[in-house]
Length: 407
Image (cartoon, rainbow, N blue to C red):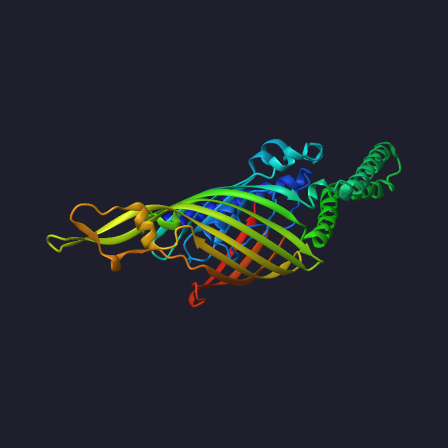
């Protein structure tokens, strides 16, 4: 079986097991946490594998899997979880979370993700990232009054139904009138059905309230900070790793992004990111005695700074966005990087025309949107256009991702 087939099968089984767990969780009466949106995994955000490179903030409380469609049908996957929430606060009710300190609630938003993508040149990128929420205007889990009357209503109903069931069973056991027994059995069956349907009716009302809350607050303001690390390797068709690749594909990034809602239909997101990496410069040196030229490589410590703004219009079900991203390298030219990383000595000189590196085009414009097709699944799509310093068009890339909450 091919590696990507195995990976796809494992992911399917993982999703299926999550769906079964979700059914058990609902049957047990646990109130599932509600989020204002389903975000991109932080590691996909760092890798640029999402339709929007300036992603809105979000705080989820369930396992999640992302599938990126940027690079064809390869299994480009990311898995996301919240360890502090799972260990300390994922309980049948929210009282422990709601009574926690502000610091612990922030810590509960800690989000860990791991992911991998493969590009068209068979370079496999692997990485991990962590994100934490610093500020939230609205926390769905802290709106205590949203569900309190529902809980009281069904608690009272359950007590009344159990009392009716007890009395009806007693009457059935003690009656001597044969004609009354069919009617009493019918009443018992009806009461039992009402008791059995309590959980589904309660969850339906809770989900209805949550939908109203999300519809009203989908563009609430918030602020996130994140850090991540990626590695890139040359890989073959069997999935074996080869030479490690330098340049921007391998490095460490840290970023901050924040949302601000405007009215009921608009959301503005800003992002600033720094990415530190080893920049590889390729060049040739010439032996002045023989005239022979040999290929050389040098590594310079460099960084890329990214600053952008995203405008979204829509609501909790779907949005459309337009964004602008500007990026620049700290060391701006290949010659400057080579001067820092390599000193020609002896009887050799650098062939100036041979110096080259991986260029970063500074200007990116993207447009696209997302569609939350269910409470647990969202589709993101977009088109990305990259321009050079003179705003000359360079590349066009369509990107799509599917995110699925494991509940």
